[in-house]
Image (cartoon, rainbow, N blue to C red; front, side):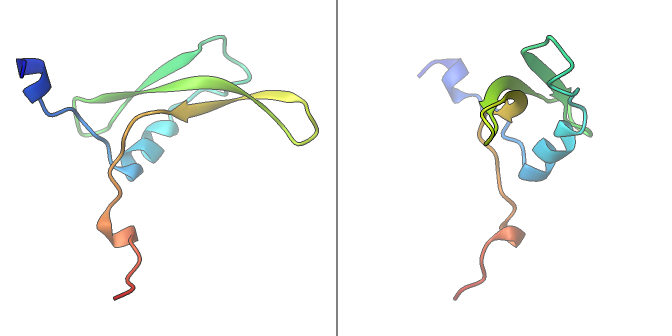
Length: 81
């Protein structure tokens, strides 16, 4: 195993992705195809990618997407025991 495989990569919490998304510019008004946002309180960043989507009326628009892994806090899990 190489040393890079031994490194633990940063995996943000769902709340951190949500908070970082507040930094995103309007995807319909920017030519950027990706946007890197700071995770507050850390030295980490996450990158969002702009994608083209079709609305139900068949018109095109753009949205931001996050394609990484994320942690979900256990307080959001179902309590069915």
